[in-house]
Image 1: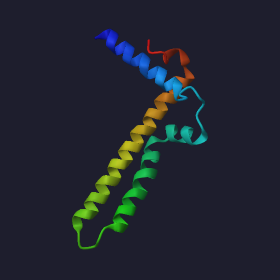
Image 2: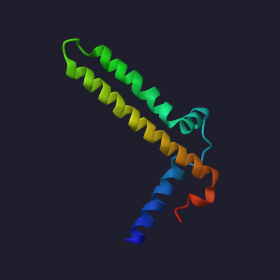
Image 3: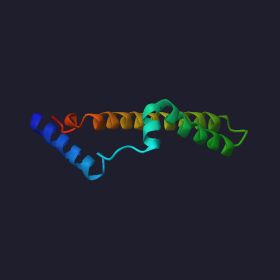
Image 4: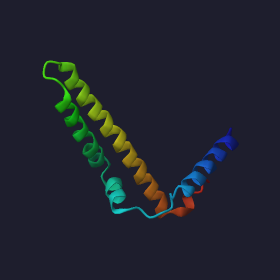
Length: 100
């Protein structure tokens, strides 16, 4: 089991290097990593407002759906921003990114 996990981790780091995971972050990536909650809200609130604008006034469940889906989008983008923070932290210490 340990060999399987190690080979999976090595494969992940190889894929990360192939996709440019060692490149320095852009200004937007730095901002997102510093403010994961803000990044989530910047993505989720406009989406919720868009769904609220599309929902008819006589359907109360559409309002609940819009708010819940906007909240879900905020959580997804916030977790993605948190993953970007961890990626940038690994860039600061390259010796810890090899899976060992």
